[in-house]
Image (cartoon, rainbow, N blue to C red; front, side, top):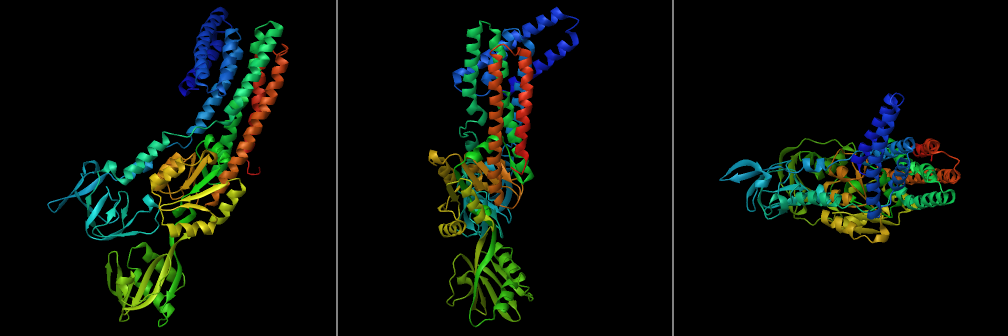
Length: 599
């Protein structure tokens, strides 16, 4: 039911009850006329609603309640009608609250969009609005700044962090002739680009557009309560019709429909889901709607991003080889001592590697860094280089898999480090748990390279992986998922995941780093740095749906029993409306079980 109409009906109900309490005993005739006129007007409005519902073919839980309200008001059973109306209003309001919990409007994504650019004009630099950038404009990109538009480097060299756009965990070295994407972040030194696209057509804005489009095309999903609505409504109509036909008394219709008013369907499921959402929150996962919980419970596909999701998004040394003529401890100390003067993410990893082994770092002199190549320094009279193999030495070097950093001492090859993005220790057990919970189709969709993707997928037990996937590719993979693999869940953490999170039936964001585009466009957010929480929310959703179904069915069975009794004229309409309170209480108390961790 339209939320504005819900508020209108609720306001009318409260006003009418207040009028009766104030004037009912003093002005009985006026009160009766006032109630009758308002009742007829309300019945007419709701009757129109009922016709619209019938025409749309969307026979939800509201249809039977509207029928009961219209029947009671037309037959002059106003009190019974108001009671049912108040129950309907309360249920819809609760459902609206659950659906809008933690709702957002892509605020973070839009806030983080580059808004200005540094335009170079006759050697001078001036700040302009990003929308004023034209193809061919020369722009300066300073350290730690986002690239405002897609462009090509024509002067300078640096490395840029594209992880939020592509999922690639390693920084990308760029120099003259390199293409850079808007939204990537300059790590080290300034460089200049020529704009190849205007802002509206650049990569970052394309992601924003994809998210908006995804959120305006949600997948169709039939809610739990609506699945039971059609058979329950038909049963109620049949019992009411037979009772009227046999008794020849139209009041029997109102008596049956009042006790058939689907308050258990309207209240039980939302309360169960709000309780389940509370349980999830208590366990470190925010689920934004009851519908998301329903979808998680019935989902058949779980798709994961790699960097920051299956992995930590943090580089570690996976292997190191030291040349036979060098002392291992000395090489580690020299390499880390030089690298501690660099802000490069790979340099920080090598420093941590030495520090974790309690290696004391010597003093370094004459340090000089060469962008996109490496860094040099002098230690105890020895010339130490760390960086690319071509930069550090002309000797033959040892080759290792993964991203590598080479070390030379006095121009001689000394060591090579292999760096990888660390797999979360809980990743494999989480995948195994999801399989036991019924997920048959578990995927990895990432912007990282094929070799790194397949290695990680194999280690954690994922059999199908899609490497080198940009945001638009991720959206296409989700869109083209066969019908039998729906509902789908996408789990990710970066800006590049936001469109897929929004398009999937359910998006789950690893949002422990704080509010970001992934969290804003997702249906659920993991607040802790723990992938196993994805398994927890799947289990909680299963438990919640089970309790919701049981609560609804208990309410339905009680209502059917009351309908059969009312068909014989044994339950007056006002008593029937009040008995609904008893049914509501039973179903609500049962639905609250979804809050317990002991299910």
